[in-house]
Length: 414
Ligand code: SF4
Image (tube, rainbow, N blue to C red; front, side, top):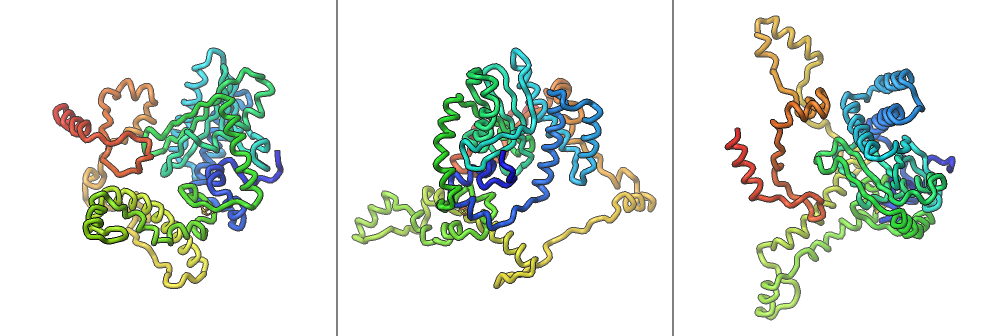
């Protein structure tokens, strides 16, 4: 295991360096930063680890568990929600462990060496479980805005390769399959909260071999820039010239205006050369423009964030300045203010609203089982409002007929 805690090629950034081999060396000039969200994620990971150790191992007893949990709860970032999401993680692992004929080996925060595949590479698996013929890696993700799938996920595959290197010598040829799972309890869509991929050991190792030359290139410093979705978490994304060139070549936008058969027929008839420019965009053109525009928007937001940070540090971004954003009035002491309203003669019922708890809060209050037994029959999940998504989105296309029918059924029932 290398002593350097900041490997040039990390498993968590594999999606990026596999696509843009120049990124790892380019990023070296930008300092590692953290965010409130990242720190919340780190704290929840510690709670998850503690729960796994207590449930599945003899590494800690009840007293140590309580002491360590209480210490974590003192962190100013601690939130009740972390208990709920870490419980979902633990529940998933418990169900999985119960699916084996004999108790599986379970371990948390397992450090793995990846140097067989990527120079100086190492990583940490949130949970490794070995049962039957399967090695199972589970990763907890605390984010909610960007869903991360385990399918085709290089970070998870690298963790799995590292775990194979660590455990295969003890289990011999017993391990035949590798399953990777990502639990993201706060993801907006239920479909994104638990995703898995299963590969045979041979498939996984073949994938590992296929990325070795890419990893060498990315490590060597002779990689090539290539922008795309993977730029999202690159430390230098706002200032990257290669990425900016992708979007500043606005001339390329004219390629989105495709000649349709009707347009071409018109051109032939008119005897003109070049691309026709009818007044109305076709649906094909709109689809292409939407795809191009989406990534431009992400890039523009990154530029804005960078520029605001630079201006606040006292740097000059010609043509721009920082101003105070909109703000709303707020109480300095809400309880005292409302007590004063009531003392002035207003009825408490007029001052406070009685609101039902959300489904999620009730589920956490009652526990999954009782929740399902007592109120499951009162719950439906109507289709969400139609929203535009790229064709690559893994959700089923919106079915207008089903949605209309659901609406009618609900009206009749309620
Ligand atoms: S911003 Fe994108 S193109 Fe630029 S170095 Fe990072 S990953 Fe590569």
